[in-house]
Image (cartoon, rainbow, N blue to C red; front, side, top):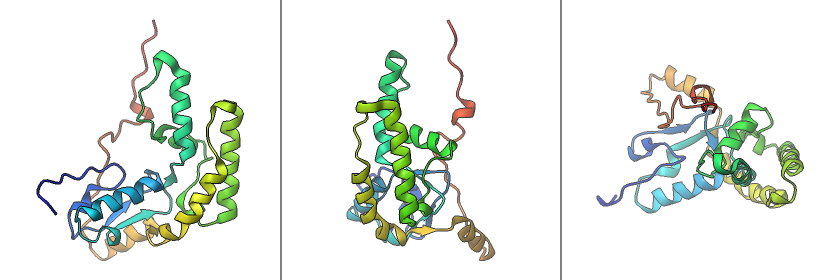
Length: 194
C-alpha cells in the first residue's frame, strides 16, 4: 500500500488495515449493500491485502435500502428549518424500521419471497405517507438484490455462532464501535421548548 493513501472507512471496519485481522460487521450496523461492495473494491484497488477474504457480515444486520435513503431526504425536507442535518444516507429511517420491526435483515435477503414481500410492504407504507414525493422504484431495488444475493452469500455468517467459535478457539477479539457510540436515540438531548 502506498504511504500517501489514507483509507476512508464508512461501513467497513478499520480492522481491515491489519492484514492479519478477520473482520465482522455486527448485527447493530445498518448495512447498505452497494456501499459495502464499493468500499471493498476501493480498498482492494489501493492495495490492502485480501480484503474480500477478511470480512464477514452478520446475518442479523438490517439492510439500509435505497428506499431508506429516499425517505431520509423527505423526512429532512418535512422538518424545514428545524431539520436534523442528517448525512442523507438513510441511516435514521433504517434504524426506525429496525425499531418498528418492519425492516429487513440480511438473512431475509436469501429468502426471496419473504424479502420481496417485506420490501413491497415497506415501500407501500412509505408511499402512503409521502405519495408522489417519494421517488423510488421498488422493482428496481428488487432486481438489484437479485444480483447482490449470490455475491453476499460468501460474506454472510451467523455472528453469534462465529463469535462463540472464536472464543472457544481463544482467538483475540477486538470490538470496534462507531465514533457516535452511545449517541443513539436514548442519549440525545431534548430540544429546549421556547
